[in-house]
Length: 308
Length: 286
Image 1: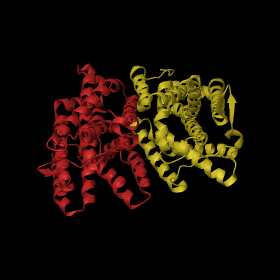
Image 2 (image 1 turned 45 degrees about the vertical axis):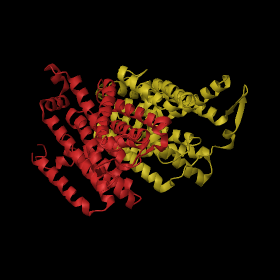
Image 3 (image 1 turned 120 degrees about the vertical axis):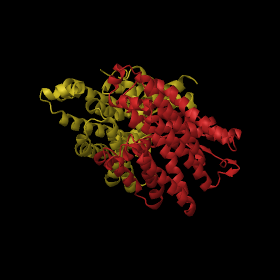
Image 4 (image 1 turned 90 degrees about the horizontal axis):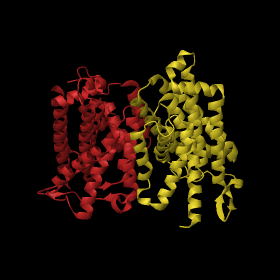
């Protein structure tokens, strides 16, 4: 419980400080929260269920492209119906994961890594080549954020909406992993065979976790599209999926909060440091290597009692 | 779409497949022996091309650039394997992230040293011509690529199937623990195979640099294609890599020509199906 209070205090602090910072910092904070959602979805799979997904960006892509296509081709989702798009994005991410999961959940270990990579590349292939729908390499430019009483075009307002959705996602996932269902996921992570002998349908458990993670990926995608104002194939490319994995491993798998810490580091490097210096990618590469060599439990693992 | 179209596309597909074989044969050996999902394999391909460009600028000789680049990258692979991968032990997730870290480091280093332009590796004039075969203009370079891939494929096959070292490697692929039990130093085998894989990838980079060009980001473009080849053929199988390269090379070429909008999808969807139905691939052993 202590961890949740610390998280809420940090988020409250960010919310309080945000109005006094510039638009760039607000943008970075919003990016951290959106990628924090995708990182938590990866954590549900990797940290709690033991499934290392190498294609989580696919679901972010599905949500983002859906949002962009609805907004630019049908003018849908730019008023109150934004909230409908949020739900549709989650549903689309979950449905995609529901379809992909039929293939992926059969595999384990290295093969799960490879099949999620391949599924992610399928989505990238469509995004990159299906010009008539996705705009191909150029992607889709959004035309402004929604307004419904409040103007999301205002970066600060949009940041608060993202913050609200992040907190909602965190509590939803926290409830999920604390529930009996979540406990059996951990059981599967620790020893799948034993769970199966105990009578659990481990395939179904993993499949449901996979679908839920896809749903949160889709949610992150809806926000990602409005945050950046453009959706392009780069958003679903392999490095995006690998980054999401790194966020979890770096922050600490199986903690949910770790994903946000990892997202903070990655956004700082990719979006802030990259605008400052040419050599930022050395730091990113070094973070990958050093995390693997020296931080087996992630940053959260450094604190004693990191497990709630 | 006359017969010429099909012949030319088939030829292009086969020659692209030849390039893929150089990239994927190393990747599949590395996976077979070490069970490592090596996401820095594309970086070795890219660095091979870049080193060749430097050697050519210094010496003007393409023929010299080819082996020097491949050997230099093999040494780099050797270093990474010894210092970083070996101590890691078997943990697919950590291996993936570690190799990605190196891919990023190499990418940045390449950008700092060679800049962000698309550089073309100019092959010697003798290979730049084209010949007319049955009314078709075929670039000599692409014929050379196919011949080289065949030669390397045969050499690898001979080394693996007919020599003592090959027998040791095959034993390690089949059952590393048993191989250790009968006194095979599997750690050395891993080192050798990883260096060989880097060597082949760099060779591919030099060869491919003539028509793909060498530019930042190429590493992560070729990497998933190489994985498609390895998965379709069967991880750890050389013959599988050969067949997979041809299938993927042809699928890529005909896909782009016949149904461009789903060209890449049609490349990775079979990879998914094979992983779901027969994870060991067409020719993989288990």
